[in-house]
Length: 121
Ligand SMILES: [Zn+2]
Figure: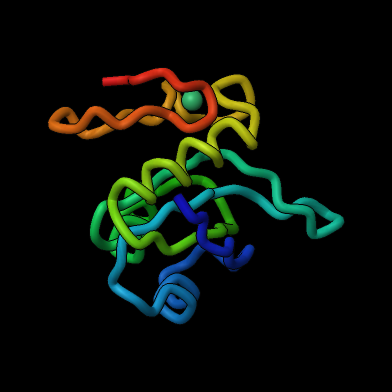
């Protein structure tokens, strides 16, 4: 499955999310921090099946302590899931991220992680 281009990092606030995530679409995202050298340090990976912008705004309202984000649109919920899995492993998994668990697939699917091959419920 094709992987979309990652966009960002951008400032993680409502104005910036609204300005940069302009399509209502499936997608995946990474929340994190910019360090003193403007290097993006990932803290949390997520996705949305239908509205990645709405999910980012929701994460803002939850008060996630991050000041930057990157995102990728996806052509389908399945692609969003696979991108989130790739982000999860690329960012070091639970050891490096605030994610308590590996990304989970929707219960009505048999999707598997493209990296570790495991099917998490
Ligand atoms: Zn995996």
